[in-house]
Amino acid sequence: MPLNIPTFDDVLTAAARLAGLAHRTPVLTSRTFNELTGAEVFFKCENFQRGGAFKFRGAMNALLALDISVRARGVVAYSSGNHAQALAYAAAIKGVKAVIIMPRDAPELKVRATRGYGAEVIFYDRYSENREEIGSRIAAERGAALIPPYDHPDVIAGQGTATLELIQEAGSLDALYVCLGGGGLLAGAALAAAECAPACRVVGVEPEAGNDGQQSLARGEVVTIEVPKSIADGAVVTHLGAHNFPVIRDKVAAITTVSDDALIEMMHFFAERMKIVVEPTGCLAAAAVRRESQSLRGQRIGVIVSGGNVDLTRFASLIMAAQTKRRASRPWRAPRPFAKARSGCCWYRAALSWSPAHGNARAS
Image (tube, rainbow, N blue to C red; front, side, top):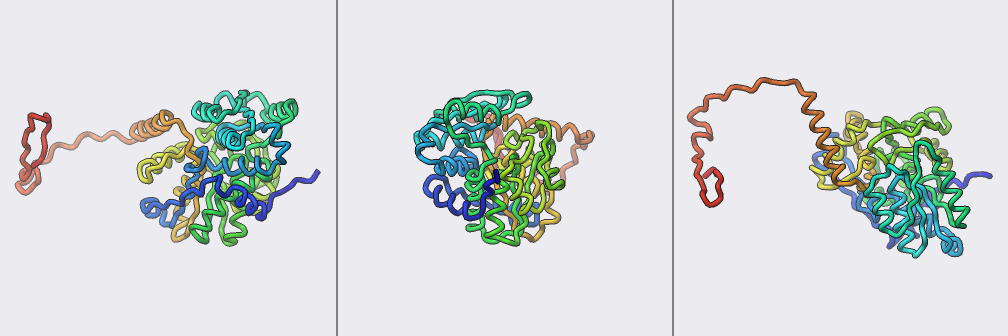
């Protein structure tokens, strides 16, 4: 049976379906990031999307595309987190029962949110069990519709609306960087960019530990790998989707990878300089732009910030661990002797006064 490969017309149909349901998320810029890279960078911030990630677009579009009689029997999905939350949220809005299959090691924040939207959660072991088989079995047993996280034409079309909005707001781009897990967001982005900004070079970005997409693009066929281990839990997959790969093969210029350390650096930058919380997977695209900045100088670059669903305790621990590691790697230097102050130094001009009421010293 031939695959139903989505087209740009499907992206436009999705945009019409999602109007008033999905947020039109902000496009932010950062003068500091532009100075670091020498490029003009536009961040499409899907961390402000309903459910905290771009996944709401594809999940809601796929749900609305179902016949009402099919929708009434419920939906089933398998996901490490963001698609789980997105479909649970979309189903709750439309009054549809949702069953979500999640790995036992899924972030607790994402499990709680999925349950909070009213979905039934069933766990599996991602290292020894096949989630696709489990999902198909449960859907058949319950007579429900299976909506996978990325390998589905309506999901891909829905994800493409993020890039459609980005180009409508930012204008034509020289390059667009998009995170890559199973390929739903990248394929949708490529469909939109090819029509709205034909000269735009689309680049997918994976974690170093899981470069199945990079291998697949190089070989011209889908490559399957072992379950990778990365802090980018939203991109921890073993292969690209069958519906995604033809689009990626034909419309994506390159696929690159970045390290977990680079993701943490980017999380820190987003929080400190742009005042936004971004999950590790959401940092993939921006981290690649930062690393490849030498070749991007003077260009207009789009970045899809895919989501912000990260436990704040984990967020803080990742950044603190990275800072400790960085300090430990620096060579030790003996402290410099205190330099003798000159008469013109501010130390001589400043008079310290003691405030008994507050118990502190202040310069006056």
